[in-house]
Amino acid sequence: MRFFKKTDLLIFAGLILISVLVFVGYRHFSADITPHAEIYYRGELVKILALDQGKEEQFSVPEVPEVLFHLYPDGTVCFEKSDCPDQVCVNAGRVGRAGEFAACLPNQLVLKIVADEQDPDAPDILVGN
Amino acid sequence: MGPGRNHTHSMVLTGLLFAAALVLAVVEGMLPPLPIPVPGIKFGLSNIAVMYALFFLGAREAYCIALLKGVFSFAVRGAVAGLLSLSGGVLSITAMLLLLFFFREKISYTILSVFGAISHNMGQFLVILLLYSGMNMWPYLPFLLVSGMIAGIITSTLLRFVLPAFRRFHR
Image 1 (cartoon, one colour):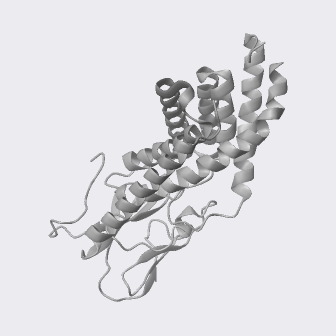
Image 2 (cartoon, helix red, strand yellow; image 1 turned 60 degrees about the horizontal axis):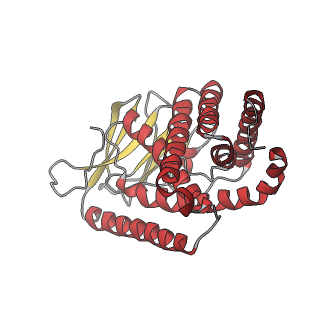
């Protein structure tokens, strides 16, 4: 068995093509939707945030006061500070489009961006629900 | 004589490869985190050891390493990490096995490695989807595919450099 064949390049091109298509398609379908943010602790909804108010705020949920969230005026939210060892949540950066999420698994916190229910065109393709 | 000349030999090699996989994972953890907004995307250097086991020892040994890694992650980092590691590892090996089964000699190590990496990421993602209901996978699919591709290329290249050293086991 060889390590590399010329046809491999074709497969790479195909993978990149699929990635680009999904990326562009997702951005296209999620562009006009006004979403809101939901924060879950241990799978239960503990906080809902409106993202279109233009507010800037630093906050944490009462269940986990060590984790700081940051809401920005442009409608994005992020994990600003966390006491977890791997910092995956903080490194995830800001999220603001419907379907995006960030999670701090050691602290059992999930930050989800969800489309408002009145919008029937939202890309709410839920898997396993 | 071929690899794993007897049961003991194969068992010892599997243990060694498991240790190698752990060391690779630790070394990878020391690298600076990637500035990509997707949780859990990594190079998967420990896959080098798993791939070697799969290609040159056998499916049983490879699954064994995946299981051991899952148990280890569970012991060190908790249930969720253990489940993620196990699902990623098992799905990755299964995908590579399927590819080997259908394509035999016609496939290259690089492509096997790429799809192994992609399915490893997918396995972990599926677990997250199941645990935290209502997640949307579409925004992250491009990152999963591309990072799996890059990781697969890197790990298969590294495996290629390491292979001459391993040949000495099989004389």
